[in-house]
Image 1 (tube, rainbow, N blue to C red):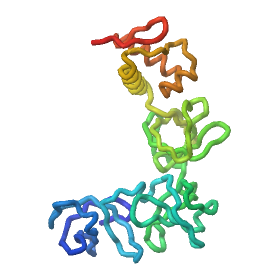
Image 2: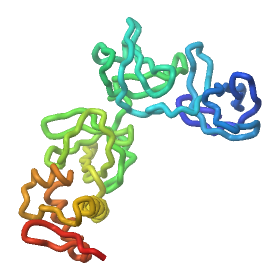
Image 3: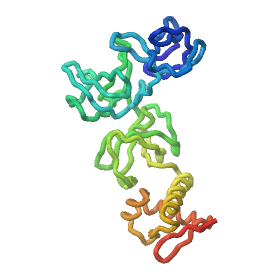
Image 4: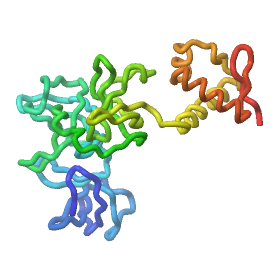
Length: 276
């Protein structure tokens, strides 16, 4: 069964002057010539994205849109009409946002956080700014310490509301943020705590995995600066954050781990890489 608004692996059924036809369940689906990979022949299987063209015909493409059905993405408006707005989502045909699905009147050139969905009446792909209706913490599919994909949704007094795996909402508290966050930013994080329907999220990875990732960063920066960096546990948190893009606590834990592994040594003014 083919899925509109998603990637499908379909077999080439026949060739035509203007492309190839792929096998659908009860119809043939056109993949236009400009999207047919070189050397494609009948019988080959191709991964394609399916959507409806301007004449409401189901069509395939090997282009990769910025998001598929069910995704929350930040997209730029390219044109606006009384009926709605059109967003650039990486395909030749722009994605439509009905006027009824806009929270504010969209303006060309501005970016908007939207959810891609399939309209029940037309079966066509569309987008909506009214994302909350698709998010719920009633039936959680995540657990504590699980790695998750997060999208920055909005800023509040206590932190940033984030969308977790396109399904749930959580909070990254201000004291856990050590970089500038903007609506629509896509990040990796993990579930720190679940309290009923409240989810606390932290960026990065839990435990020593986080140290290992930051250790790679510090060693790379040492290599880029001839094996020496003028930073240590006496450096200010602001200096650490600006240069390493990590908190001072993480920095101290990481350099301590590198010292124990005999990969760095401490000097009076900084850290120095030990050559193997």
